[in-house]
Amino acid sequence: MSTQRRMTRLAPVALGVGLVLGLSACGAPGGSAKQAAEFTPIDAPVTAEQVAELGDVTLNVWADQGEQDLMDQFVPLYEEQFPNVDVQIQFKSYNDLTATVLNAMNSDDAPDVTQGNQGWATDGALVKAGLIRPLDDVADAYGYREAAGDAITQLEWSEDGKTFGSGTVYGMSPDNQMVGLFSNTEKLAALGLEVPTTLDEFEAALETAKAAGEVPLTLGNSDKASAMQALSLVQGALTPAEDTRAWISGAEGSDFAVDSNIAAIEKFTSWAQAGYLTEGYDGMSPDDAATAFAGGDGVFFVHGNWYAGTISDGAKFDFSAGLTDGDYATAGSFGMPWHVGSASEAELAAVAFVGMLNSEETSSMLVDVQRVPIYSVEAGDPATTFPDLLAASSDQLQGAGPLFWYDWATDTMFDTFTGGLQEAMAGKTAPEDLATRVQDDWSAFHDK
Image (cartoon, rainbow, N blue to C red; front, side, top):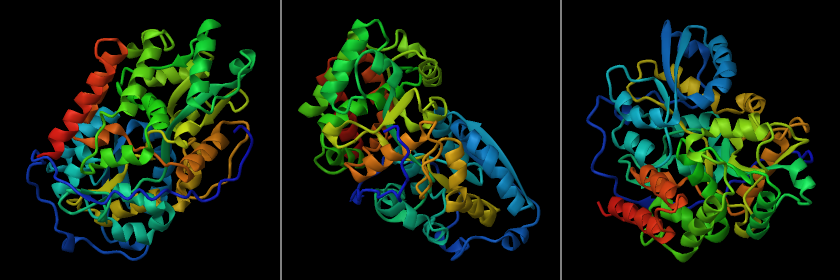
């Protein structure tokens, strides 16, 4: 997929996850959030004149640290259009943001705008506690609903936070993120191989690379999430995507501890034990792993398309969607959603920030930082890997669709899954025991 391709509008797959489900009783403490009737309804993009009526405004924003390149472009444009607003952003690591945003949004100095994370642990808790503004009107006014298509369901909740996948839009995200396969095509050619498209081809390529003295699969797992995301390439090839999405969304009767998932864990962990992965992977960050891979270490790197800014040489590297065995299913979703705080005293300025950020107007900024907009864009510089990203995103969304992310499944699943997978990769936990542990976490959450 190294040739230039024009991007047509993504055709997000209908995910059908409107399920009535019980949220954990351990919700956020009571706050002073507004009731829905108190929000200012909008039916068109917020104007500079409307925001000017607020007087001088400091807009406090929380964002994942991976947003900094985009914000460096977006914030000056926003402040130019809304000159009475001074945007102050706190950038936080993913783990820090998701661990603290609930309490922050329930405090006296809550951010006006924040990113969250789909699933019960973050967005579900924010919705349940009434800490973020419903955004149905914003999604309509800025053309977001049309661009997102059926995939907008991942951003919808009931007002009580018990229904994930239908109801009201509470967040908006401008880009499509997915785990895929970065390949060093120069090394593959030297090994007499092509980019693999099936699980058997991929495993054979790993074996060939190992025999040739190469690092077959570069991995940095100090964040603990990277191995879980890489596993999805295998799991997506063996288990139907709709079953995984149903499990993550809490469909009654779903079970992770099935033969195909156990086989996926067994295969992936066997690669670790066979020495196919970077030595000391648990002590290396994913950023360092991506940099090392871009510098020539390793034949493959399974990670998110957000690393295309680091692995950017289209003449040397390829990015492809998941394997054809699973019709291109891997972990993926829209990026971390942006929310307007329900207690914000600068509501229209906050709405303008989130709406403008998620409008077609900013798509070119996403392209500049090697991220895939949900709006139609040109294929980009053929000398980079970006055209591959657009093609891979289209392949997945028109194929089996994204799997979502395993840690959305419960409010404790991240620790359960990542910790157990580390043990399994080290040979300390059997694959079937990990699958059972994961399912037990799921059952305990949904039985509440």
